Image (cartoon, rainbow, N blue to C red; front, side, top):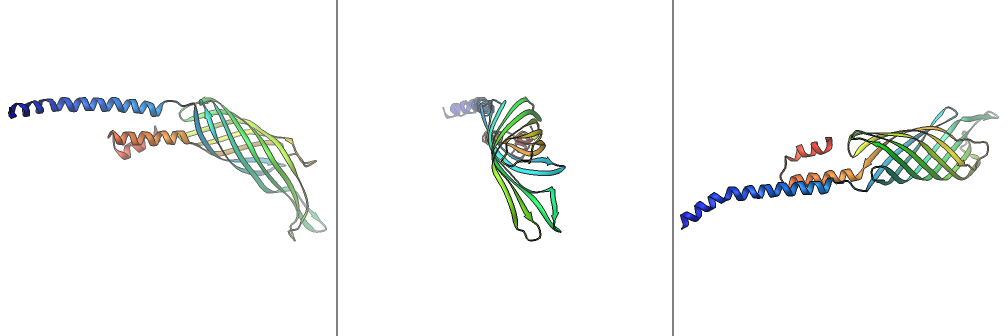
Length: 237
C-alpha cells in the first residue's frame, strides 16, 4: 500500500506543479492588466523656468506647478512663478550717480494644456495659462543702495503657445515651450512687459512611477526575470 501511494504521489507531483504554474501565470497576467490599465486621472508635477525678453534683455521666471492629466488629453494644474532682476535698459546716470530699475514679479497661475498628440517618446500640446499676482518696479541708487522710488500693484496675465515633451523614460521628460505673454491688467503706466517667451523644464509623471514600482514588485512576487533586468526593462520600455 505504501509502495502504491508513493508511486501515486510521484506520478501526480508533476501535474500538480504544472497546474500551479499555469495558475500563477494566469494570475500574473490578470494582476499585470490591473496595474497597466488606463486611468482617467493622473497626477503630475513640473519644475519650470520661463525666459522672457524685455528691450533685448533675457529674464528668467522660475516656477513650479502640480496638477492632473485627464484622459491623457487635458492637463489642469496650479503653479507659482517669480522674477527678481535688474532691467538693464533703464540704467541711467543722474548727477554722475548710477541708478537702476528692478522688477519684482510674483504670481500664482492656473495652467491648462490640451495634449493633441501623445506618443511613447514625445507629446505635443497647446498650453494656456492665467496668472494673478503682484508686479513691482523699484528705483535704486547703486552707490548707496537706497530705494528712491517704487511702483507696484495687482497684475492679471496670460501665457499661450506651443509645447513639446521628449520622454526618454516614460515617467520623466524634458518639456519645451514657445509662446507669448500678455498682461491684461498692469499697475505700472508706461511699462509694457508683453512679449514672447520660451521655456525649458522637467516634467515628472507620478502615475507612471507608481505603475512601474507596482510592476517591479509584481515580477518579484511571481519570480519573473531578475531584479536588475526587471528594473532596466521598466525604465527603458
